Image (cartoon, rainbow, N blue to C red; front, side, top):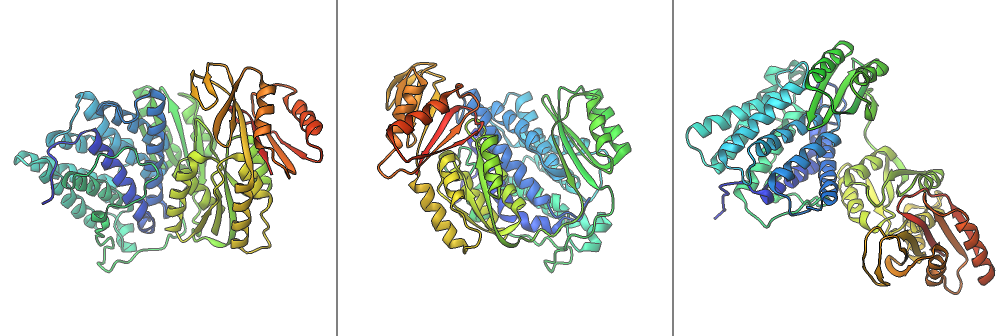
Length: 554
């Protein structure tokens, strides 16, 4: 017999978010195919998925910074997720999704709830629908807004009749499905294309995931940022065509403003948000301006990029500005092989890009999420991609991204490069004239054969394999383990080199960090020359934070 929750606690709310992300990961290409309104650019499902995926990664980072991972009360958990979702929001649908999350957060936070019962779920669903609608300057019926409103109406009606939490979520699913099926009756462009609204389809997955959590209790789930396993009970596939035949439509030529402009603003007053919406509505369409805490997310389709940015500058400095050409493109991958590589610093990125790779910023303190890696794989545009995580802690995200990209028809080969120097060694042996499997084998071997080390400065006291360290000590890392603790950078660097140099070493790579002491590299080059004749030294101005030096020996 299936258990049914009576309330949602912090663990079940986490499961809800992760299951929604998993459902979007599994079905985003279907939702993309439905996307004909407001612009037929075929990315609604992808934008909703990437928004939630990056929000999960961002929430994890913020909780790590607060020191409350897995221990945060529900109010803190949902507040962090709400802010992260707004910062990660992509496209019209992503911004609206962030407002649905905001509705849950506001109910939990304003009422200081540790658990969410059926009545609170009703208030959260209504608040999310209200926030989503008010963020859109010109709301259109037959969209996700309509589906959210209808769901909130059904939940409130069920509560009047004394419904339990399980009955409430079942009523929400039934209402969302019915409202989604009616969207072609409300919007001519959907009726012409023979599809339901793409955003509404994404909202249905959001509600279905909640219903599954309530009716199928499982083990508590932490933020599974890289877990793409779809709950089998979410395999239900309602008919999303208006004709009942399962038809989808190909994106058509866009007729309207040429650009999508998005950016974030900090600390904008409510009155100024209203004025900003009005100004953007004068220069474009599809205006969505939403807020969460101290952040305002701006989305507009316009021909005048400068005017869109100036509208925001009147209130604060726009950040994370993203401008996308709205011209319809063929999203099918082209034949060929590309390299996508994570880069811990700008200099490392330059070297990788010179070798033909698409790079993703990623390193300690700001590691790339699976969503960001997927976006880079799509940017590469080929049907085969060689992916270099270049960091042990990014490997799981790379594997998850590879799985997601394969759902789009791409084959992704993940090389086990655990450090930047291993990634550089792998790229150096890539030969575009050879078949992919030859390159994958050669690059895997080059990465594995590169012995690696690093120098960094201790930022807190602790016990390491090299003994106790204090703040400010120089730490030497060999093969991923802190084995040396000292006070002199040169001496620790010598010990690291001794740890990675072996008979037959022909090349040493020194990747210089942003905070490396002046003269360090020159002194190390002389030290190597004096002790190991015939070894070539390659110096890369990596510019990476945290690590004074990354070292590799081949």
